[in-house]
Length: 302
Ligand code: TA6
Image (tube, rainbow, N blue to C red; front, side):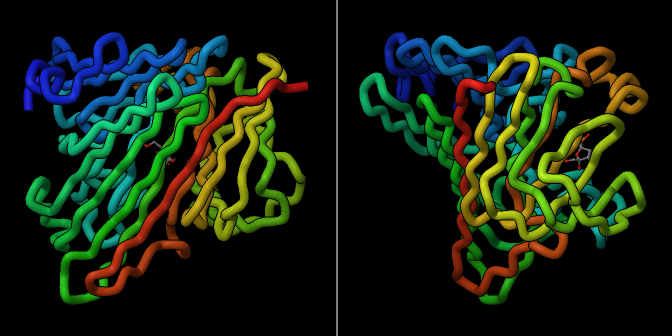
């Protein structure tokens, strides 16, 4: 559906409208009681969320590419149905097909000035992936409010069990990556992707970043808090149905080498992702439904 049709069908004056960008992507603009948000139908990707009186909470790369079929660098890409490179098909796109597919907007629910929920879906008919030819339906609901709430449900429409990985690959804006500490991962095991997947133990209570960091923390359903000493704020990431937590920053060399990120943009982001990855991948019975959700909120820091 085109932007005008979507605005006619779902638009709410001064709260929600849809635009088509110069590159042909459709974006929803949300404005609610001083809270601002954005979501692209491509990837059902939230690219902005800013509660009233707060700095932007989500990082959007100044060099991001907004083009059909291209992953957008920033916001909250949906990673599904595989995380990273596909273990069984080297030719498959990194991080699955959900983030570059165009999702359907199925519904909008508004509760006055308090919150606005968009519900989107994607099915096997929309993607027809040779790399993951499973009959499925994914339903994603995003609630923009003082808290940003995201819920991804996956339905197995086949007569056999399916297996998949998933993540809400959230990019958080930070004052500087060296001023950040992440709690909620102490004494857990992580897969270190900078060390060929070696498994390590997280010793310290707080995760800090002083070099390229690319870790899949296993069996970590607890909430995480990103303490930003520079902006004196805490970003709280609650998780449900998500057993893994991914922490990523490419650091200087890789960051500068990424055309859609660059230097010094890499300093202003940290990914803390709720997901089910590697050992925590989801095995879903025939006809079953799996749900994962995350809620992001901001508190004043020390
Ligand atoms: O979530 C961390 C990670 O898997 C890293 O390995 C890094 O590749 C990052 O995702 C970004 O991936 P992308 O395909 O968006 O460049």
